[in-house]
Length: 161
Image (spheres, rainbow, N blue to C red):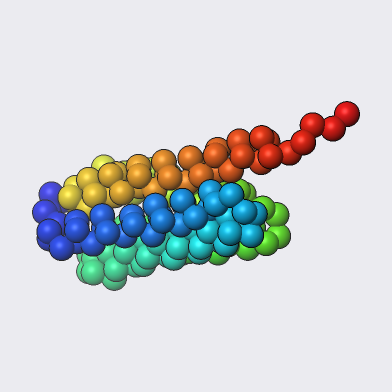
């Protein structure tokens, strides 16, 4: 399936990275309250995007009148929103870094499963090219935010013996 994506889809995908970058920077704010709000916003947006990615697969499954591969697509359509929801719950229950880390895992896992679907001819090549680029930026932002928050927490903690 080698279908070109409309330019608008590419532009909107790139624009969709702006909240990841902005919330990622906000999650690194020096005040714990501000950084916590930024981290929550980052996880909330990431969960929303994972839900959108799941919806894409429902669209593919419903558009495929041949019935070929619709069960895995429907399953993939449900998994990312559930993962995003759990990531969102982790923020107040455990820690923001846990939610951000789970999101990174979710974006990586979704791309891996989509690549398998592409190899089976179930995903358009153009879509996958866009997904690789966007997901690489998203995962990089998420991982950097977690690492920098951990480094900042380590530096900010006084040594006690």
